[in-house]
Image 1: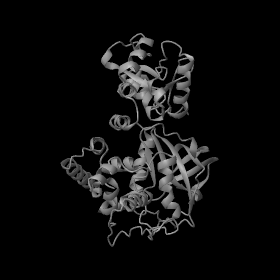
Image 2: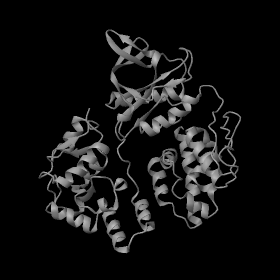
Image 3: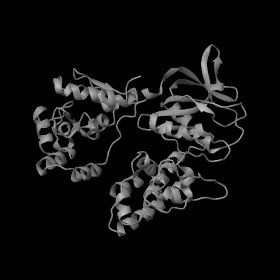
Image 4: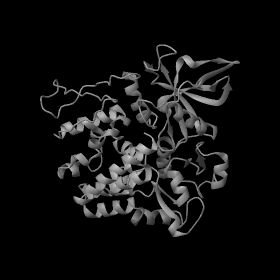
Length: 422
């Protein structure tokens, strides 16, 4: 989706938001996301979960399912830009909700035809069979590779039809779709071609050139290795789901661009960290949970970084940042080590599951760009360059060694949130 299409799509979503607000439903989180990320990225983030989008139930109650993300991407001209698996899931949810949707179609872009799975149930809420769009360059593998980029590499393709790769901006990683037949030896080194001679200017090639510029300024590069029938073919027949290639330096060669192959790593070793969740959504979950009022109030305070949780953390660290010693209250954050979304209620209230950090360190810790070892030493992700570490005053350890219970939570942070050191 180019910037002009994205602007039109964003405007359409704003109109849907205004209509929802007129009906009394205020999708505050979604409204914020479309302004922060733009319409296409916001909807992809919302629909990345297999669960219905936030607000789906409320709009269903208002009998306005047509305003949901699912209905909008199925029924509008922007349908063609979304991962077919995302579209399929959206259609399935609409069907199960008894919403009589009309898939958007035009002569240039054939759409997926979904057939009810009669083996499960005769009702309209049954599942659907897998189906494939019948157009050049798309295969079963091409359909599934979108889910691989999204769910395994944590870097959704901009468009499953024409994207040649994707970017994880948070971890500064570029993932390129490359051909196995372009993996070869060159001057004694193992290399793979990342850009060939210019034959046609396509959206995919323009995207690849932008990705190469990111690699030139320091983004880490990886290759998803794909197979095709011949050099002339552009159809993916299969791809390696188990491992990806770590790439090194860029090499200019004749009218092509190559990259060194450093080695293969398991695809599952690519950690995406824990995505941030909306405070509003978490508070709404607490409000709907079967809790007594005292516990609910304590959890709400803890989610807001206030109340007993914050008081106990400040007491433990002498009212100052656990790293810098800063005492400016407005700058101090009560940070959970094991993320809120992964913690049980008792862990959310446990002051051992937390650190007092200044705002900048809290943001780095929450994003998995820094963590701490059992002695209190700071580990800094290689996502941050040496220059950036210097500008941020990193590394800088805890002012004292963590206790045994804090070490347990820090171990979780190192294993599941920290983006790692290469």
